[in-house]
Amino acid sequence: MKIFSGIQPSGDLTIGNYIGAIQQWVEMHKDPSIDEQLYCIVDMHAITVTQDPKELRQKSREIAAIYIACGIDPEKATLFIQSHVPAHAELAWILNCTARIGWMNRMTQFKDKAGKNKENVSLGLYAYPSLMAADILLYDTTHVPVGDDQKQHVELARDIAQKFNHDYASDIFTIPAPVLRKEGARIMSLRDGTKKMSKSDPVDATRINLLDDADSITQKIKKAKTDSEPMPAKLEDLKDRPEVKNLVQIYASCADISMQDVLDKYAGANFGTFKPALAEVVVAKIAPIGEKVKELLADPAYLDDILERGAKKAESIAKVKLAEVYDAVGFIPRKG
Ligand code: TYM
Image 1 (cartoon, rainbow, N blue to C red):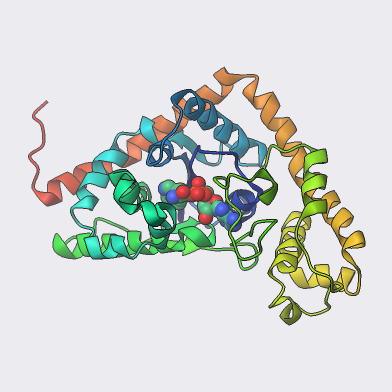
Image 2 (image 1 turned 90 degrees about the horizontal axis):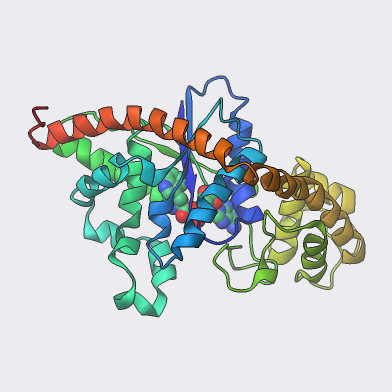
C-alpha cells in the first residue's frame, strides 16, 4: 500500500483537517502493510485563490510543524512542499490534456468556491483537481486518506488515470482509492451543523483551530449551537440534530472512542454537562499540538532540513514516473 495526502497552507488548520485527514495518517503509521507514506504541503494548490506571499511562506512551514506535532514521524513518512518537486506541475499539464471539461464541470467544490463569481475566479481554481490527480498519480498511490469533501477529487484522479492508461495503452498509473473515516469524515461548523467546518470561513467562532489555546477552545464549545433536547441514547436519534451529532463526533474522535460510546456515557445529560466534558477532551487532544508547533517553529533549520530530505526523496520517485509519461505521450527525451 502506498499513501499520499496533502493539505493547503491557507488559513488556520482546523480540528476538521485533523480528524478528517491527519489523524488517519498518524494511525496509518501503525499499519505494517503500508510501504510508503507521503504527506505534502500543497502550496501550488493554495495560490488558486489570492494569497499573501509572506503569509504563504510562513503557513507552509507551519503546516510542516503541525504534521510533526500531530504525530507524523518524518522518519516513517516523506514530508515535502509541492512546489519543491516540479514534476507535480509538469504532470498536471499532461493530465489537463486527459481530463475532460465535462468532468471538471461536475466538481462540487469548484461550484461552491466559485459561487456566483464563476467568470472571475482563476483558471487554476478550475483546473485544480488535475493538479491534485498529478500529486496522487506520480507516486503509484493506492490509498488517499482524506475528508469527505475531497472524495470527489480522488474519484476524478481515478477517472483520469484510467483514461490515460487506456488512451496510451499503458498501465503507467496505479488506480488510487479514497480512504475516509467511518465517523468524522465531515466535521461541521460549530454554528451551523449543515455547513462544513472550514479554514476559509471568515467567522472564527465556527471552527476550532489546531493552534487555538485551551481558553478559546472552551469558549467556542460553550457557544457552539445546540438545541433544547437532552443528549439521546441512540445514534438514530442524532439524525435530525446535526449540531449535536457533530459535537458527539468531535468528542468521539478526540477521545478515541465510538460515537455510540459517547452516547452511552452522556444519554439524558444536558449541554451544561456535556459541553464542559467535550471541551476537556478537545483541549487534552489539541492544546499540546499548539505547544509542540511553537517549539518546532522556533527551529526553522530543523524543519527546512526535513522538508529538503522529503523533497529529494519525493523527486527521486516522481522523476521516474514523469519520464514514463513523457515517453508514452511521445515527447523526445533530451540528449544530455
Ligand atoms: P484541504 O487543505 O482543504 O483539507 C485538507 C484535508 O482536510 C480534510 N478536511 C476535513 N475533514 C473532515 N471535516 C472537515 N470539516 C474537513 N475540512 C477539511 C480534507 O478533506 C483534506 O483531506 N485539495 C486538497 C489538498 C490536496 C490533496 C492532494 C489531498 C492536494 N493534493 C492529494 C489528497 C491528495 C485540499 O484542498 O484539502
